[in-house]
Image 1 (cartoon, one colour):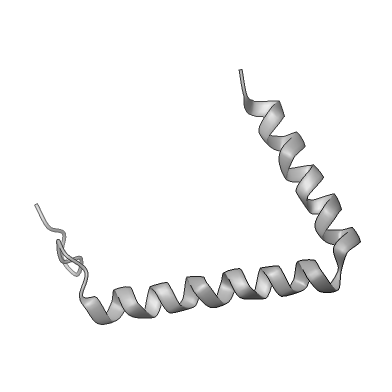
Image 2 (cartoon, helix red, strand yellow):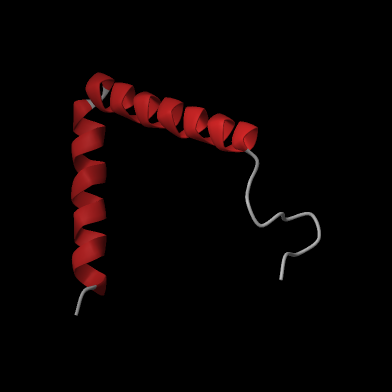
Length: 56
């Protein structure tokens, strides 16, 4: 049952905009990782530790 204001299939223009946004976000994060390798490394280690903490 579709909710008001939420069509069952998202329109193609919205999907294109979302894909472009996610692509740019990924590029920005990659650039930040290249510019600040130490910060990227600590963030990666922190993420890995967090994932280990919640695995059973």
